[in-house]
Length: 290
Length: 238
Image (tube, rainbow over all chains, first blue to last red; front, side):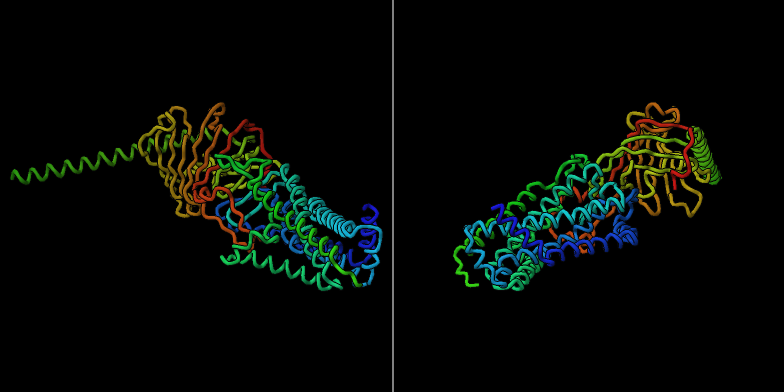
């Protein structure tokens, strides 16, 4: 199994396509950081206009805040980059004609499929570590540290700077589960195709469709919204909300809605298990002709 | 003849009452001004201070932790609250208005508005009307502990920042008229940001939505210590 994983990782990191995601992430985050460094104060002032008769004192645009802004935008697009690899894993082999050869090796089909999936997990993890390094560590170096001031739709959350880091740690772990879910969708679709374009485009379409359905606040779509994986992918934001006591004082080290986070993780894990199992089942039954 | 005498007598009585009332009001106004001046003289003993304390924010739509703050004051009205390396959210023009600022000018009319008890302390109620038409403060009502020359409560109505109430508790710094605790209450306006701005497209809501309907806001500072008249660098207020 370990040998299979090593082979799969070698195949992934040998292809130039793999590095597109790393370069794209670096370019996007750098551009965002540059924009916020140059015009960030205007952005902050715009946000603060809605606070009316309140004064906000302190370093609002700090590394933690920049990381949150970057993640809000990035975690919508990173899944698309993960798709480039996950949806190519099986179909890519079918396309170049090596799938039959691979399946002829003295390993069970389950081991081969699972090792491919594990390789995607490693790739996703590395991509996420790259995002975390650029979005969090580089932002902290450029913008410095301070409390995290988040303006949500109906309320404001102020998190002490010594209470922020673990939240990012948890948020990135959650994001990993969310990205693996997307990878599973691409991986599953990859089992049906003879070339990688089809599953890549289909996975992206599924993500876009589910996101749109979840965003539209229409009763007909709200009924299915809790079952869409895209609805739960944004739950990482829950790590940046605190509980308050009877005096309305925010309690450091608490999470406002832990059950919601757990619920989302369970839903995402169900997606992963079902899709990977289905992929294994499909591959075991598949008559491989290419 | 008798009727005319009666009319003249009633008129005289009315004029006399009017005169006494006017004199009484004038004396009361004088009393109130004198009291304000005494309080002002006590407050004037403090040229500057650096204080450490704990800030508590109780506004329905703000989730803020209790935090340690350093407060700087320098005459005439420089005030700065700093949260060590952190961010603080304070009502505009409110918490920075200390008692010294309210009565820092002589350009007001003080009116005696009777007496009342604040926390079992007998206080004199004085209404301050600024003479300057452009003043941001429209009316201030001070509740003064006459015996100790301490302002126990102030209700101030401003043009731009609404009405706010400051309740002060004194302890070991009472000789300088510096409070151990300041409670600042105000009306918080509605807060709502479009989802397009916050990028919060999910429908997750805070647990207690009812709390958000409470429009009253409160900010409290518990002062632990003061360093008085030791000088404060002007750079602090930049």
